[in-house]
Image (tube, rainbow, N blue to C red):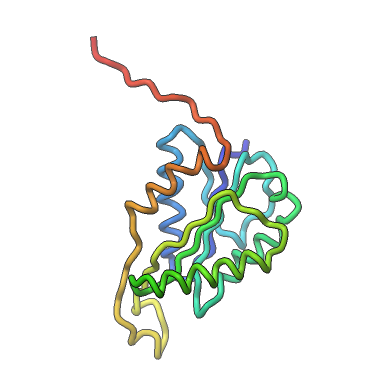
Length: 173
């Protein structure tokens, strides 16, 4: 049995995977079932009610596996609600975020015919210990806004048209 929401990620160093898993936690907290899977491993979208796809932006391009996922599943995604996110800038400046948004929008335009219902760009993380020379000389940074990511995830059920059962709190007698 498939889950309500398939959360697919394309990540080189694990940062985007961490965000995808956090989004899954937020959705499960709202009563939805989720499956989190690497984009390159995903073969079938049958049975899911919605898809969330995330990928990192490296050197101005959205991750190849995220783009490939959109291409491979174009037909299925035409009838499934889709949300997408990117981890982009390594610097927390308005200019860097704007540049990442432009790069992300360009990648989505090239996908042709894909119309996500929710789109977000979050700050990225760089751990130089996971890179080879000369990138292992970069400063360690992590500007992922976990509160912002959580807040965005909480908007997804409504944005994707998914009804969630209201949670009732049990009151001790």
